[in-house]
Length: 408
Image 1 (cartoon, rainbow, N blue to C red):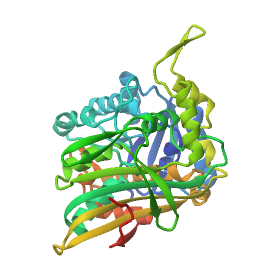
Image 2 (cartoon, rainbow, N blue to C red; image 1 turned 120 degrees about the vertical axis):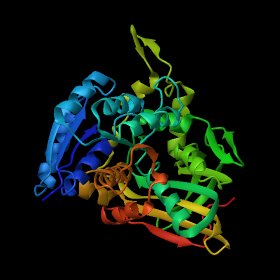
Image 3 (cartoon, one colour; image 1 turned 60 degrees about the horizontal axis):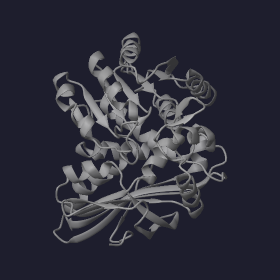
Image 4 (tube, rainbow, N blue to C red; image 1 turned 30 degrees about the horizontal axis):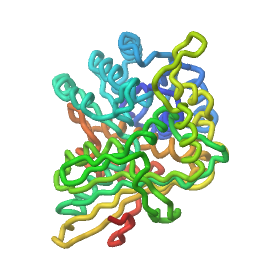
């Protein structure tokens, strides 16, 4: 007898495609899934591919149209379908309206990226952490940022703390996409979010303070095991904010990401001519933000999947005092091949590495391993069942000890 778990997935982009297909594989947990999005044809395409590629799945899929900015519309959708939880893989601008709808309807919530206002290139957890009491009082759980980074990177940090370190002092999160999609310029996830993130000032945490840097100002060559040595740049990334809060022994925390020279050159030109601006301009009587126009011109991230080659490598290096009281450095990471992702779920690796942890987080909530009322970040929960599920569902974890890959 299967436990009945109905869920709604909001969104139908590259990540939603992976979440839906992994739910279809995991049909002992996910019995009924509704994919809701503004453009229902995108959701219908995902369902058609599930029927084609996973004909033996017992999970029942349906689709619906919804405006995720509209709370009454979301409430009606949730009440009509009656899910146990909502998996939000829409845009970060929509996190709060979806959380409001979950509170109103009494269902659990999970997302993969923290809230940011549409008109300010700024993201932080304060808006969502403010929901803590409301979710707790209703006996509901909200799990924030359960993709790869954020998400798996926080579970990796929790694993370091649980199994390897008395105290973590230095934390470096590294993200390499050593893949090739064959396009002159494209982004691997939503172009608007991607470009806003990269063109913003960098930030890292050191000695109790946030140090601000110019965009892509700090770099070093980092060896990504089994993949390549790549030039990597310090960015600000949201999980740093929660990790330094929940692991107060951390003296410095940084986030590194790789970008190729051609990518940076294109981005510099686009920024130089104003195409990355989020300030709306008048265009033939309409208000249009240049970055929204640019998003419409660029290839959709999910369209890159078919010919994508190469691998991703994402990991977390911790340095500090080991369980034995001696200085220690340890690295936990995953390597994923783009072509393998396409063969399995018709996606590229960046969508895959985000979508699989979202399915896993939902599963751990639904099966009770992680379920607890309130608003939580991944590192506050037991990393062991998450690691077991990563290894089972397509993101095998590797570990290296006593090799320092990221230098001071």
